[in-house]
Amino acid sequence: RNMGDLPKLVTSLVESGDLEGTEGLLLRQLVDEEHRIIKAAWEVYEMGPNLDELKDTLLHVVKLEKVRRGYVSETTQDRKTQRSDRAGGRSSGGRARGSSSDQEDNGTGEGQAPA
Image (cartoon, rainbow, N blue to C red; front, side, top):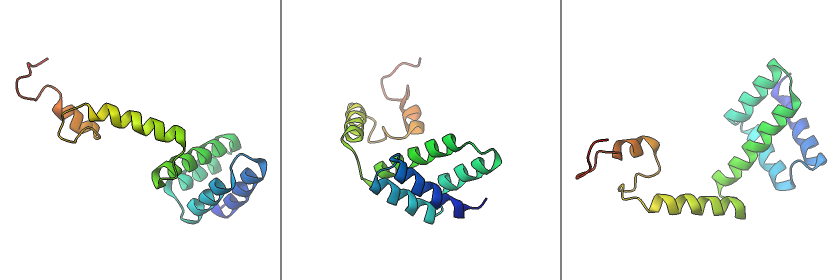
């Protein structure tokens, strides 16, 4: 199998209702762009064809890509707001996003006793 078969699967996902129209268009675009996760999922599928696993991966990638591109649903926006609120309560100089920066801040601030 080659990636040329993947657009047929995208069409079947749209026709079955697993993907809405805009999600189908986005997935088609990701396939055309040879998105690295889509490509990797296809390679895994070729090694041991599990259609349900491939569909699940494709659906997750589309949902994540929608968030990344700013096509955000209300539920996703609520989660982003909650994360932002938690990060905003810290005084880490704007480094609350990166986990390695968080580790550097732990126990190294002035006036803090070592653990």
